[in-house]
Image (cartoon, rainbow over the protein chains, first blue to last red):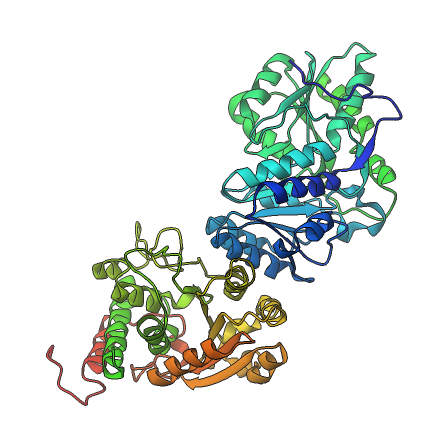
Length: 324
Length: 281
């Protein structure tokens, strides 16, 4: 059964909100629910949406300054004392700049730290390649013990934030800057370790994470007009990955397209290929960044130019169907 | 323990370090021997802890930032009763709890894992921030770091943070032995003036002879009494202290003594450098 999504899914007036907003909403819930939750931020309090928490709980907010290595170490030390630190920055800086600290002081040491990487993906736009994190999923999912979550909209980001505090151990949550359709609902299910069928179909599986889940639904809608029925999976839990849902889907469809706003190398598509090659190999096409750095431009221009939009998914489905 | 007993304890720990390194056939010699008096002072003259209950909430926290000197930490923890003394012989061997660099999850008494340099002071600052600013606890945080790791940028990020937040419950002790793997620190990458640098970051800085246990304990007590700032105690040490052929020689930073050298070293330690007759001879 596919899940309940927004009623006006393909309407042009669907509500738009940045995924990072959901993080801010989630923090406010956690602030009330759990006194051990603390937030640390590196001089990006407003843009990472940590500001409301900082105002509501000033004693549990720590301004670290522009020092991401220290951010990870402080988080580890605070977790050692029973806190649940959410260490917050842009994904290019954390986990980009402090990977060694995350590896040793957090993952290897068993410290319960949540790592929040905002402004991930090429859709950061005009800031250009230096600020477009396209490698963060690869470098976090490779770490033992790490959970990796890539929410598809602000509502799911809120749920992921709240859920991350409830499990013991390091979690990486990837957020995006730009407004994207808010197409899930409060009732849409979310669980760490689970993938969700957002559309049922028999011809091809499209397994996506982040904003690409919506683009996958759009592509599926267009393909249906040609009689091609896609099954769309939301792979929000990149690690641990819901192998069962994935395998069941490709057993039915016999082909898969993965879609993400990340390097193809090491990302969600790679994680999917690792599962399927061992269990049920089918032809796979990868929608993602083709081993390149980004550039400045408007988010929608970049997504289109570098082939990570609905059209790219549409074409990838056509291509993979020829390989069935 | 009085000072004489503490010195005897340090001598026993040095002998254990030599034996561990000879058995392991790899590991660092100079740093552990050079910091033995500091570890002895901390564990037997300064810190509060309960070896039967390593997670005792009221304990003082100890963070080792320069994980490579762990033989001295392991030997000291064994002498303090955190795990059986005979386990020291397992250093670096398959199945051991005494890994080549420390792992907090397996070893009682180890608060942190370390190895990559420059990470410990941040973790210590995180603990101190919780104790002082969030949970208002009386325990203190001690962080031992090397001089070479002052070359890591993260150290200065943490120093800035501790200074800004006046983490007066944090005492850092620096092993100022002037050597690192490639040579003398001031040739590899000049560190001085260390005192002025830390003072500029908002710390109180004390300097001690790192082999004078009384001085080390006094400095730690002084740091406790300082009400405003984090404190750095620069411990001037002799790398390889207690073993004549290792002292001051940076070649001994990262290698162990072989069997014959170990025998020589133990003889020297047991006879206090030839001053007394060893019962083992």
